[in-house]
Length: 106
Image (cartoon, rainbow, N blue to C red; front, side):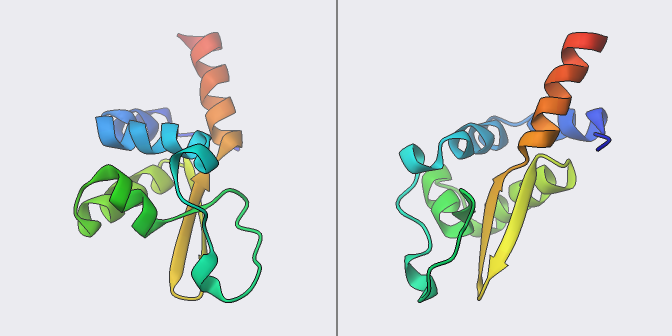
């Protein structure tokens, strides 16, 4: 995987986007149980529904959607769609690569 450090820095240059990454580091502690409305048991792999993230952030749905999109384009989030719901989780591989880049290059 090759990360785009400039895009990542742009994505992290916002307190709420940084908070979202922090919250998703431990979704069980930061969000209510997920997937209850799916009607079936699905492995969400730690993913959190957009509406839960939006509620915790206290921002408009469109703002949170834009923030999640920016974090995803930077490679920091992965998303999966289940029915009409989209679930986001951290891309741990990209985050580890970023940490390695910072240690080696900066």
